[in-house]
Image 1: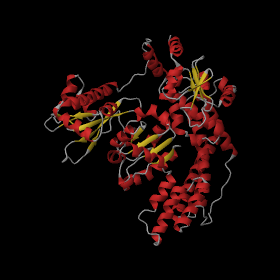
Image 2: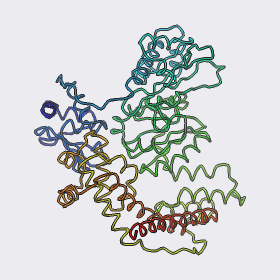
Image 3: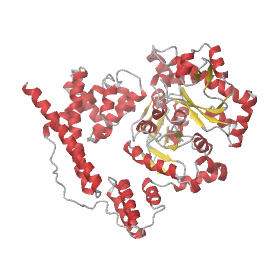
Image 4: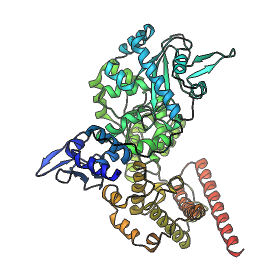
Length: 585
């Protein structure tokens, strides 16, 4: 039944009109061409064929029928994409079997709270003061509506009473951090006389609030929801859900520190704008960004804390495969200050002068240093070394020459300062063979089902797989299951819209293991394979660290690296001993 509805939706959806929402198309003969929304390119390779009603990129191989395209572009399941298209077409989709959401009652509370706050902003006397404040901050009605800004009334329990009138439980209100109880047993609202900003998860569900005080004597300018069953600060980015679609067109996301900074960038036309939750960026937040783009523009405050936060963010974002540009703001301003003072046009012009991380670090590390003092020279060299070590040799050479020409300082990033009491041995062929066999079985299992997906994804990073074709296929499989909620993989759809490693997929599908389902039988089988792979990773890491020692000039860093090598070698030896004992017992 569902297959028939999917077919009907795909047939009746105008593919050209659908794709045009995300891609600027030009007619070429019978078809339309445009720049691919899924990868960076200068020459259009994304083709829409009206006759077949499909879209396809000849470069990255993504695309497909309308449902598949929309699921990929919005990072949603095929079922959700089909529902959205069905609604536009007026097709009755019917109820599909969905996973039970154990937190639905909590989301219902948050939705009602958000509606209450938005109503109070426009329909209460004290809300008018909040509205005037927003107007003075140059927030239009359109922006207030888009960001769903609200106002928490300056009354002790107005939200509590409204939620009770809707039969929400007090325990839910308290677990969500909306309501607290005093010593006398009376309940009171946590957010009072504050402008409210709803925070959503990656699916668009409201999971928390941030509140900005209107009382100048209030010590805490902002208060945020405490962490709850549905809200974890380190796993959340403000305005992320709304940025998914525009990130495809912008081909980047702008990362901010504050909510009003997000508003400023959005006003300037940079709709894919997000903010961290008042803390330094985390690896989980970097992973969220990586799902919708491979480039980040860091637009943190221009003061010293903002600059330090930028330098802290660079290695975290880099570690997750993200390229970066830095927006340099003058006079210690933040994006909101700049737009209020200088206007949108001048803010947009700043994006023509973006810095790369090396330029940014090189300029900042010179700040407040006297290069006639040996301590300042030493500190500058250490900071630049930390920024450059492991980078492309051409970039290292550029900054070594630039530092010498402009400052008279020799960085000597790759100088060998000591002879090391360690030797680099080749990895045992048996270890390599077991690891390769394990990764083959794991990929073939993912080509069939998602049963062990979570455990595999936690244990094996993309960077762990050295074979580029297998790495790319592994990435495509993770992306497939990210977009589709299917328990089994639709091989035809996967080959058509998700991967370009078609030869490798066909080769795997012809193997005896794949044909006879001799793959991962249970948790023990998976655990054994992951152990093989972990042993291989440790030996690769040892080789990487040994290579790294060739460019270390700091004694403290050298000792730390040598200890890490020694510890890894002990772990490898322990694993090999366990394997040997198990074999002879």
